[in-house]
Amino acid sequence: MFQRLFGTDTQSKLVEAAFEDVATMFQQSAKMLDLSLLALLDNEELRVDLDDMDDVVDEGERMVRRTILQHLSVNPRQDLVASLILVSTVQDAERMGDFARGLGELIDLAGSPREGRFADELRALTDRLQPMFEVCERAFRDDNLEEARQVVATHTELKQAFIDYTAQVAKSDLTADMAIVYASAARILRRISAHLSNIASTVVQPFDRIRHDDEDV
Image (cartoon, rainbow, N blue to C red; front, side, top):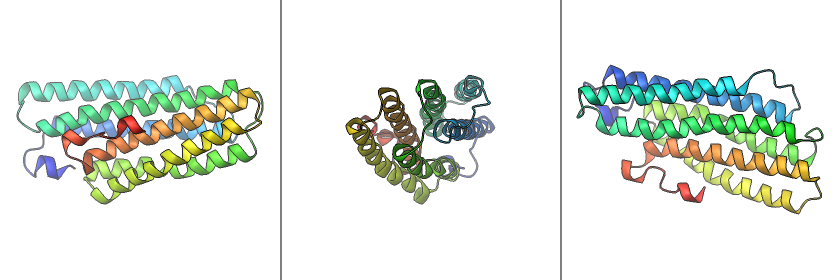
């Protein structure tokens, strides 16, 4: 786990615990996204409270910050770069939970079932996005450069695909409510993809270049 930063003998148990908390946030956000998409695009009933699920993600962020602060207060020189990366990463992980929750909130805006061309096209894009969670988590855990680059490259492709999709929605004859739902969903999914790319960039880039293209996502 981040041997490039830690080496083999210096890794703190506190920092290791923080990595585990980040992994939990990944998994919770991915689950929230899956459930939101089933309700939004497959018209299934949303049987969970996304706010409660998001609370788990938020608590994970607090735990990571608390753990890193505790670690650095005891030994500020040990694992400093890794600690800074974790603090940066946890921001992106927390935002993914927020966006997944927001996706579920769009359901109440839709006056009709989500079906037809725009639902199908958006579902095809989500089929490319959802596997990124597992790949990104694995790349982050194992410091896997190839998989991290895969996440960044997939985001670059999806970013443009979501932009093109939104442009088509704007030109369509959809009712106002459905146009808002589809366009907003595309924007949210694009942001989730961007946060995954940001996390992957911690493996690909040096610390000062992390999230370097965030303004363009």
